[in-house]
Length: 154
Image (cartoon, rainbow, N blue to C red; front, side, top):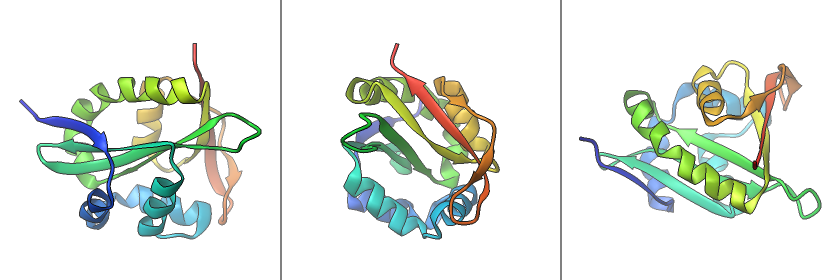
């Protein structure tokens, strides 16, 4: 039986997972904004209303959270940075995501962001959680195909 913790994320969690961030995420960060994973984590964690680390069997497999889009829109921007380790425990991790998603939707009745069309694992996770992914369109610094994704509270 795996030990699963979804706990408030810290800088120590980010430092622990940095060497293991999955290549698809690294490619997505670069395509969207020409930035490195360490900067994505720093900015995302600092801007988040709530931010968690997924720790399975003592290893950080991902950090995720939600940021306010702006004071005017009232919607939240969910994000996830994951490690290669997540692939080995994907089902276990997914089972613990729904309560976290409910917390995000309690804060922001609409969630939306963009995902790189090449990031198959992230797209599967979003589908499983119930997000709608629009057709891919050019987006970000490199104007590569990205899907806008969104979900409304019921």
